[in-house]
Image 1 (spheres, one colour):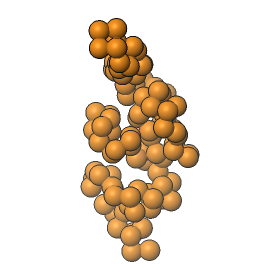
Image 2: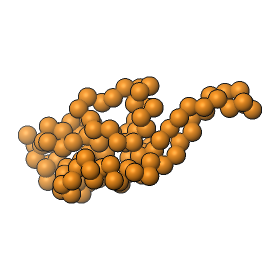
Image 3: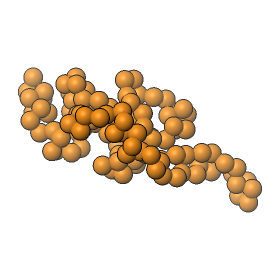
Image 4: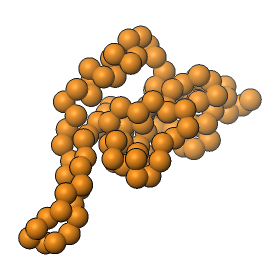
Length: 109
């Protein structure tokens, strides 16, 4: 109960949540917005209950010079539009996350 009260008071101003705080925020009705590229979600898996809107597009291509597979990332120019469409309430409580907590999350903020 103490953690729940602290989270309710400190977020969203605190900014970055640890795992315990994130679980508490989800219990308090926040929505987890997964901003990883679709290809990464397909390869690694989706977080249960998350809404997925990729901040970057990613595709795997074969580089004929290096003879290796490479990941090509490009900005999702419709990211903001997609978020606004999915969450028209500008006061929606969103927890933005990605695979390591910073790779794409900070770009989304």
